[in-house]
Image (cartoon, rainbow, N blue to C red; front, top):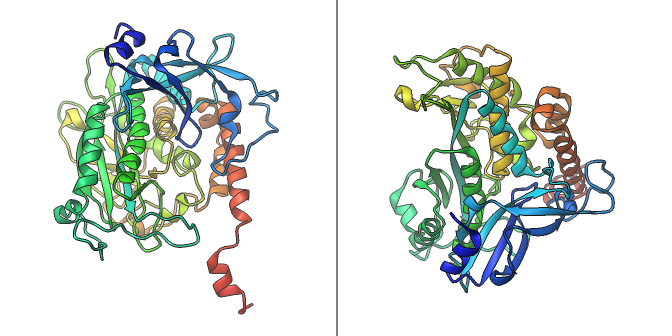
Length: 444
């Protein structure tokens, strides 16, 4: 693309959404009239936005955010330039990267964390490839947080009464929403490969075409906005909470991943006969060793750990196996050129930049340290003990104690991120739940 300014002019753009993914993976930024947007100057945003929690609180006392709340220089990534298909006037959206006044990158920015890991892998002559699968629920609008969520009413005029795994008819109940999702995604060049009805009531999964990790993280980031906007148009919510319903499966963001030779494009996970390579086994061993410590990045919220439950369609440990959906690391049956490992541990509530960075970092460490994995599991992994932390505080402690992973992701980022998540947990801990009132009020 020759120039963002030329593109804006050619598409008669009136407004620009300048976007920055925050710690939670949601969009921060500014709306700017197109004639006032400068790709050379970008915009200015407060560095403090990365220290804000999902509840709106701030981590103030930290050495990793300037105490005087300085501005960052925020510059566009031209490859992320897209139309906003739901906007009332011609509008463009551009994802931006963050820099300090001396042009050094802001190392606490999630998009930079992913770029850092990708560059480390590329320096080894390898090219990482990612294919995300993202699950979400459509739900009835809920304006009172004290009430449980309900399924939305479909075109039949009824709520879906039970689970309908892979049901075409259940999916067609929401065909108007799905058509908008497809249309919006096409305008934004979001490479959706398939869309299915998952196991939960009004639960949907989208699979993305495999490709460059940064591009796919951008696509997932934009897709979440897209699904929400499409649902709003039809009087529904689209939620990416990991566990929105008490008696339904959680929502995952499975990450298929492989490493290619940068020069030849050859898949380095299998030889010509389809047998696993040493690099492949080392990569899996890295995932097995480091994913428990990476859990705050792939299960970032207090709600995330409600999904990690035995016999509930989510992994509880880091075992691996061929075509085994009970393990945390599944190797699908495939030809040599498509050999990959599917990390089934991340939840759909994870920041896609950080979830992809964490899984690539874990595999990279396995390769660098020449680790050896356990034998592939041929039985039910749910019959084995938990190997993943069961709550956010335990996960944060594992991350704090894991020096190799912290060093790779960036110690300043890990420290600030951990402080943000610890503050979110403390805020949650002060809330007295209905379960406590129901079972403890008069019984203890």
